Amino acid sequence: MKGSDFNIATAEIPGWEFGSKGSLTVALDIKISDNLKKEGNAREFVNRIQTIRKESNFALTDRIIVQVEQNAIAEESFNQYKTYICAEILADSLEFIPKITVGTEIEVNDAILIVNVLKK
Figure: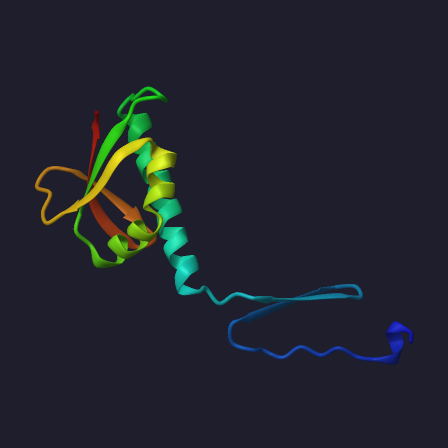
């Protein structure tokens, strides 16, 4: 069967993206699962905390304690990936507290969080 023996047509399908180049056609499922969102939140949080560590002139080996003002979405994501987060940022603890009056404001995938990053 030759490529000219058939025709591939793409239509808009919600949650899918299509791309073609020459005889190659690719379809991608771009729906983001709940678990993938949580993992993305955890990775973005790690990035933000690493930036705070750098701006605070912490040594690469300094252990830290991280406090986060309570936020239901963040808590769900961070608790699921707590081991990963703590290992990446060298945190001995990651805790959610009701209110932080003096802290650093960060954005994690459109959620504004108040955090304290303390050198241990």
